[in-house]
Image (cartoon, protein in one colour):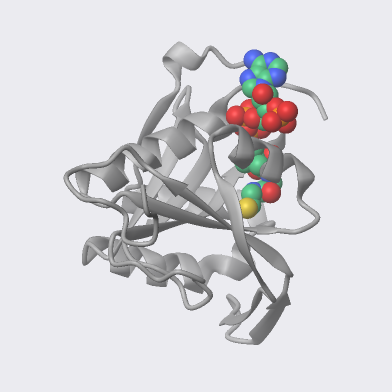
Length: 183
Ligand SMILES: CC(C)(COP(=O)(O)OP(=O)(O)OC[C@H]1O[C@@H](n2cnc3c(N)ncnc32)[C@H](O)[C@@H]1OP(=O)(O)O)[C@@H](O)C(=O)NCCC(=O)NCCS
């Protein structure tokens, strides 16, 4: 895979706009997620979620979504939690710091929402993503079978089985002590 060199100073991490939705499908590779993206976008307009994209030279090259709330498989449910998911960077743009920038920008938005605990689920065999998350301070707190389903762009049900680790990061405190830690 050819690497397209990125000048990070010119990378723009911003909120997704409706016109960006087709770009998330990567010319068909992720069209099966179309309904999921539309549903996520509706909840983004309602303020329940946030969709961020990384734009470089007017091209969407990465994405990350935030759920302001927690997930069913959270081993320590906490009302100050946000969940990061759907992190993806186009292959030609990887290993240049875009993934890290997306995560850090998502964490900023989470803090602006006065939330201080972040969860991520990562497939147990995704060594690259795990390394990135652990480097950024995420710690394993549990596992999940990673079973979920969705309707694809043709309306057909699809089942996903992706055994995962649940990772947690506590962001700098904004006026409260995390309820499950004693220090
Ligand atoms: C996981 C993913 C989002 C990471 O995106 P990325 O843009 O490559 O992330 P970064 O560049 O910030 O970090 C990746 C590595 O590149 C390194 N890197 C960052 N800038 C670099 C640079 N200028 N030169 C060399 N290496 C660099 C980082 O140190 C990191 O190293 P590590 O693998 O030892 O941790 C990307 O690989 C991806 O889209 N994968 C497929 C989807 C996926 O697995 N998503 C996660 C689901 S949980």
